Length: 269
Ligand SMILES: Nc1ncnc2c1ncn2[C@@H]1O[C@H](COP(=O)(O)OP(=O)(O)OP(=O)(O)O)[C@@H](O)[C@H]1O
Ligand SMILES: [Mg+2]
Image (cartoon, rainbow, N blue to C red):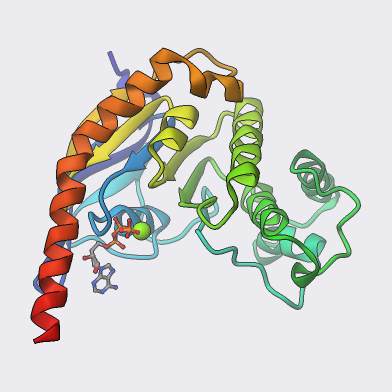
């Protein structure tokens, strides 16, 4: 079914430990070009570790990552990362935060300036170029963060719970915005979330990781039609998918919590 020629990102036999703690255990995943993948799994199962390895910020112990058949050995402008907390520089305006990656890569020419401006318009921040992060709401800051990541025109967009700090309404608006942007450029996206409904709403496939050490439990295709309006969240098919995924990880989440509690009790003695 999957055509090797279209494989954008290949994760092969990825293993990572921190001291004696095995965080990722022989993880394998192929991602097609333009695919939107959501990663869900219990806390501590290695999602962020995987994303950091994909970003080139962390080295695996075994196995590796290939993009277009080239092995990844460090950060590169083919990938951009959006973390949970916005990483805006407080002394830079919206505009100067948006173009920082272009500036660092020496690519801030007229065409890229124009593109960056169009991204600010796309995320609804036209007119706010001269504002500073402290003058923006959380949702606006996270939208600048998204524009900043997209400005370098990455082929792969890596997102680690990017909307989790936002209120429910802003979060839904951001989900719709992200899909709109993705549908225009069809980047390959890996999106980590704890919210199963967010994963189902956004993704072509939901990758469910089991509890530590991180292993893939299941890859579920989301066949909901696109473009997806927010109302799709109220359909039976959507609810069914969310239930299926929740059932898959419920056991793991409960076990993680009880282990966590056991650790705390031991610590309290
Ligand atoms: N730099 C590090 N040094 C030591 N241990 C680490 C380091 N980074 C992660 N870990 C451990 O690796 C495991 C996986 O962590 P990771 O942050 O990848 O989990 P996660 O799935 O992103 O969790 P969450 O959903 O809570 O964000 C955890 O047990 C964590 O304590
Ligand atoms: Mg994490």
